[in-house]
Length: 201
Image (cartoon, rainbow, N blue to C red; front, top):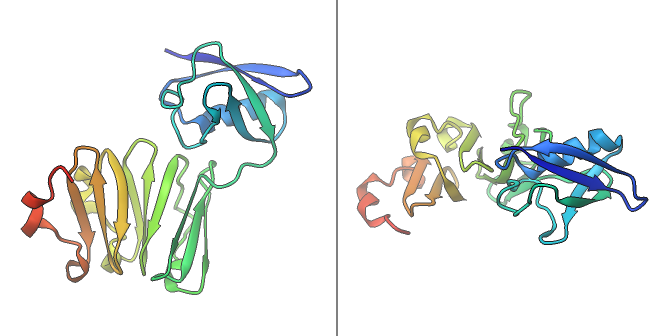
């Protein structure tokens, strides 16, 4: 059921809009910006303070009819990742834009097709990236040798809470306590031999 929220500026000018409980706060931020005709960096509620743009409306506890204060300005990135192994950094903004920089080969892996509109965290290794969405699903890209292709474990990459990276593989912790690994076997990308021990982690 849709919630009606009101975004208010210090001047007293306000605008109302509707969102779904499972929408990211970033959707509300964009709707507030459109309705008020200004750039909105963040929204603030009396109960939760400054709202994380990547969190869901439901998870931050917003209620129907709630009034939110507006922080004017350009929003910062929703997620930033870095890797000493990759000698590079990456950032994702709320509009899905992804930017990487640095000196390693991973810094050059961002391509036009990568769009991450609802990302909450990004992890990288020496040649690939893994991003966790607000829905707990995972998107990967980069070198297949480094885990940039997670097709073989895609169906297992749901309800992910956390991802760790080695030089050329990734391991993801699911909300049920199971661990899913992919990438180079020599670098820990295959955990089937110890899968029974990786329960309720």
